Length: 87
Image 1: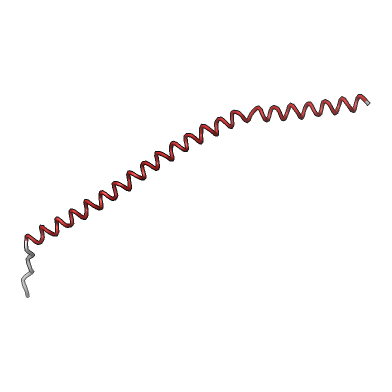
Image 2: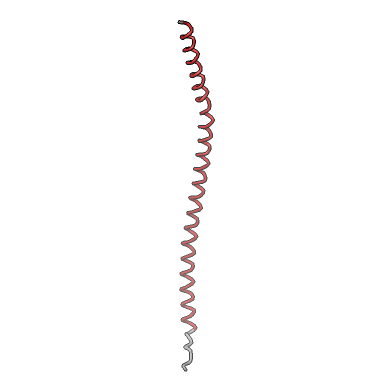
């Protein structure tokens, strides 16, 4: 049997430092990506709130249109009935 090879402590320290640098770079990239996702989520929330308020305004402004249409229909029926009974 052979004895296990013990690595040089200096080479282990160098490899650990390289690994640390790689991990820091990776975490920085992930942090940047997460910040971008949070920014896009905030923009989406603002757009959604804007669209909701615009939709609410359209719905509030829409109800007179149905009332005017119903009033025009009733008026047309009344005029037609008046013309039929007038002749």
